[in-house]
Structure formats: C-alpha cells, structure tokens
Amino acid sequence: MPIPPAVQHLVADAQIWRRDIHQNPELLYDVELTAKYVADRLSAFGCDEVKTSIGRTGVVGVIRGAKGASARAIGLRADMDALPIEEATNLPYRSRIPGKMHACGHDGHTAMLLGAARRLAETRNFAGNAVVIFQPAEEGGAGAMAMIDDGLMDRFGIEEVYGMHNWPALPIGSFMLRQGPVMAAADEITVTIEGQGGHAAMPHQCVDPVVLGAQIVLALQTIASRNVDPLDACVVSVTRFEAGAASNIIPQSAWLNGTVRTLQAATRDLAEKRIREIAAGLAAAAGGTARVEYRRGYPATVNHAAQTEFAAKVARKVVGESRVDSNVAPVMGAEDFSFMLEARPGAFIFLGNGDSAKLHHPAYDFNDAALPYGMSYWVELVETALAP
Image 1 (cartoon, rainbow, N blue to C red):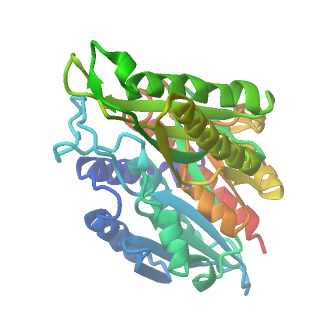
Image 2: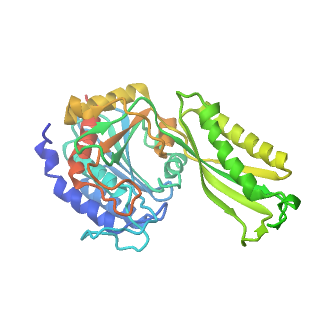
Image 3: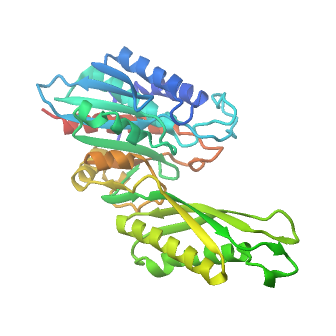
C-alpha cells in the first residue's frame, strides 16, 4: 500500500536525522549528545512537553491531541544507544567514533519516532496524549527499567505502551509480531570450578577441573533436551571456558561463563535449578567443588493479547494484510522493552529491514527505505488508539 504523501515528505529529514545519529554513536547511558539532538527537535516540532534526564539520560515528549478533551495517554518507545563494535562499512556517514557503531538500528528507531512526533505535532488528529519515549541503555543497561523507576508510566499517565524493532531479512514494508512471549529472557551464568592441581603427567594425583568443566558443559545441554518440555524453548550456551597456563600443569581451577534464554517464567526457574544441581553434583562426584552464579537479566518480552491484535490491525492498515505476520515464531534474543510490558499492557512489533547484514554485525546498516513504514505505523497507531 502507498505511503501517505504527508508521511512521505518527512522521509528526507528523517534520513538526515538517522545518518547524523549514526555518525555519532554513544553507548548505554552516555547518550547525552543523542538525547540533546532528540530534545531539540521535539521542542522545534512544538511538543507540549519535553522532559530530559528521565532514567538518567532518557527523553520524553508529550503531544496533546486537538480532537476533544481526554486523559488517555499512549506511550511509543525508541532506543537511542549504540554498540561497542568497530564499524566495517565504507558508508559516507559511517561512525566517526572508533569502536562504536549503531549496529542494531537504534539510529533508525530514533529517527522514525522523531518523524512520527513531528507529524503528530503538526496534525494533532487525536484525543488524548501521545507520549514519545526515547530510551538509553537498551543494550545491556536496562534503560527501560531506569525510566520506569524514574516515574515514566505514572508521571505521564501512560495506559498502554508500544515498541518497534527493525528485523534484517524481513522484506521492507513488512511487519511481524505475536501474542505472548515474542523475545526471550536473558540470564548470565558463571561456574567457578575448584579441583586439585598438579603435574599433567600424574593426573591420578589431581582433580582435573578442565575435565570436570568439560563434563559440566556437556551435561548442561541435557537441560533443554531432557528437562524442558519439548514444546517449550530453552537455550543454555557456555561461551567462555578459561583454565590453565601451561601444557604440563593441571590447573587448580577452571571458569565457565555463558547465557540462558527462556520464554516462560517456570522454565527460567527450572533452568537455574538444574544448572546448580548439575554443576554441584558433577563436581562432588569428582572430588571438587563448583560455585554457580546465576544473574537474571531482562525478562521475556511478552505481548498482551488485546494490544497485539490492535497493533497487527494498525500494521495491516499501513502495509496490507499479506505483509503482516501476526503469529511469528518467538525470537530467543532479548529486549528490555520487556520491563515496559510488565508495567503496562502493550505490544512489540518487528519492522522489515530488507536484505541487510544481521543485527550486531560490523557491516550492519539500518535501511532508510524502512523509515516511512515505521513512521506511518506510529502515526496510525496513535490516531486509531486515541480516536475521538
């Protein structure tokens, strides 16, 4: 379906904003320049309120509709932070900051929400408040929780909240989402194994933490294959294994580190329980010890039923029935928008980024052809949800 001319005319400016932000990536909460860039434009658009320093460096704009008095408020969220990756492109607008780049498309997310804010401030064709949320520290810093803890939902009267993320390989002009868990919980595990070191030629006099660590790595894979319901999802990945300093020495200790991804709260609890049991049991059987640190990170991103149905309806109005998959398989990556969905009902949707490098890849770039579709979705969502 064609993009409305009123939105299409915003694309050139949105592309400029996106590329400006891309050239100047900032990490986690240290997004002061990006936050100022956003706040300055929201003020220039005529937003009724522009608040900064929400959740340390977050920015919130409030746009009041002109179609009658209403206390309703809908939140729309974009993330602003980049990643500690060296960009591997030759783009004219490539990152100017060594070791930092927008490898996840947050520059595009911010630009699309800025474009929608400008359009909504121009027309105000709704009743109630559109609350545009620009969040820091999505990439591991739980910026969503920081903004919530700073009063985001109550301070701005947000009743429902919606998020969007680009998705490589999904065609431009397409959307996908699902009810229930759409992204996984992300936890971190560390296992410290203590054995008995000694000469590598005399293993019978030692308790080898390397062998023990290898046994633990393999045994942890049985959690998904033998403890979790086959119709559920669980990933246990050990990604780091450190031990020893010489070829002829059995070390005293070994160290494992990795991640656990789950979609259901009960499965998350089960995974933690079994990791502790497996590590402790195998270590004890070999005459060593294993200490498990299980650190819970972002919870699963769980879309609410009514809001997911509504978001899918809005997306279909923008791009047509055939370009919206409303029952996509869950993704085992994680997203801190999950905290916002725990605080308020809402939905998280994926927007096609076309044939691009994968997320978090040094050759990734947000596809500017997606800009009008994201902006149209945001505008349509507000005008439909807050119709007089």
